[in-house]
Amino acid sequence: MKKLKLMLAIIVLVFISMFIVKDKILKDEELTGTAQFASSEDVEANSQKKNHSNSIADNILLVNKTNELSKDYMPKDITKVNIEFVPEATEEEKQMAGEPAKAVEDLVRQANEEGIQFLGSSAYRSYDTQQDTYTRRVNSQGQEKADAYVAKPGHSEHQSGLCIDLTNPERWFVGSTKEAIWLAENAHKFGFIIRYPKGKEDITGTAYEPWHIRYVGKDVAEEIYSKGLTLEEYLQSK
Figure (cartoon, rainbow, N blue to C red):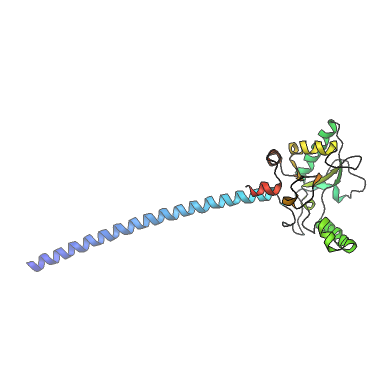
């Protein structure tokens, strides 16, 4: 009789143990599933954040002495800009990417209505054109001077198709001219910034160029203008 009771007790304990183990396994699986689900959400959130960051970089292309474009890079929807250019401008230099080309046409038209006349000097420059210019400068003035005054191939913002150099009829475009003043005060309204502003040479790595405007879109241009930033500073803040 005692043996029977002992056996029954053992059987009961076994069943209880099995129930406890099974319950623990189910809870562990539930927790694991929750953790996996959370991880999946985290991955998706991180991916979205990364994609947002990339979209900013893609739309606001940074080209300078440390950020270059490939030899094969071509601007999107490159087209001839419908404004008057200086006589010596090549057909290549009269081109820009589609959206900024339209924007600079609007800018020049508005300036004309306000008594300000702009001429296009140079917009797009291909990698090969940059290479030829750089090589000629090295051959004529040496490596050191060439590096000081001419962008190395792939490091010129002109290859992006997003910028243009403007001038005035007198061909004397300095910061104190009425054309330079108007451009500095109004370029952002058309999506452009003064790419190399005065006093920011240590950040841009380029001397002050009041004639060189760069397209970034109206919203970004407004923020850069209102905060007195360079493109480098703007991108670093994002």
